[in-house]
Amino acid sequence: MLEIGTGTGYNTALLCAGLGDQHVSSIDIDYTEAARQRLASLGYRPVLRTGDGIEGIPDRAPFDRIMATVAVSHIPRAWLDQLVDDGLILADVKLNPAAGNLVLVRKRGEVAEGRFDAGQAWFMDMRHPDQPEPPRASPTSEAPTCTTTSLPAVAWEQPVPWFLACLTNGTPVDVGYRLDDDYQPVAARLTAGDGSWAEIDTAETEPRAVAQAGPTRLWDAVEHAYRRWRDWGEPGWDRFGLTVTAYGEHTVWLDEPGQVVATFAR
Image (cartoon, rainbow, N blue to C red; front, side, top):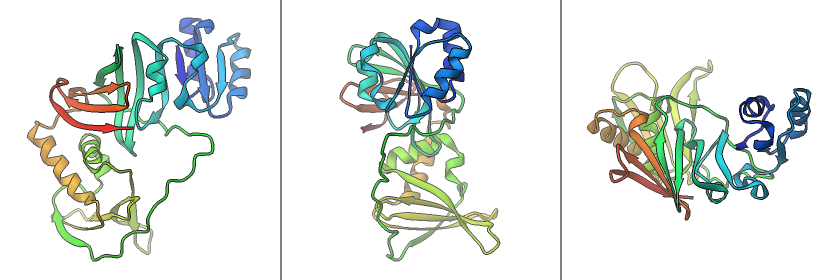
């Protein structure tokens, strides 16, 4: 068993209790020594490593199960390589804040496939050693396109259509609010690294004002995602699945693998 994200060691202790510490390996970017001491005080001595969880622990492979207690933007190739055939990976796949969910995939040959959990998972993003901030362009100064919408202003509070929108955008999107002088939110704000932005009035009355600018039409993607979601009968997470290949191709599907929603590569 490989755990990605040792943290305090609490979950590692549960794994040791259930599987035996000789069958548990865990990796985290830091704090593993503190976790080691806590586990030892309970009589558990699993293999703990300090490093980038994206790389797994190759010298302990192969693993029957890999579980990530951090959110990742994709299923890494190293995890597939270190998993036995018919093994399972459980991970919180998040393209953006709130845009994704827990998914359980089973490896068969060069492909891993499975469904998203019916509930909603929230894990902190995986951290990496010396991870630089991605370069970001300043918000574009071009004149915005102004429209109106009847959709919820805070798009990321609707996880499934927000996930679909982020698949459409194909670029990382930051979320937040524009505040008034009293520090109250007056608009939900989406921004992308290419300088694109969108602001949606948070007033309770409809329709709400929308302004957006830049090469990526961030709010258009939200509108498009809602139309698709509603056309499909507003499916929950349990109707969506994920297929991952050893070459990094990730395919999101609805109901069955042949009904492709979107494909992305990492």
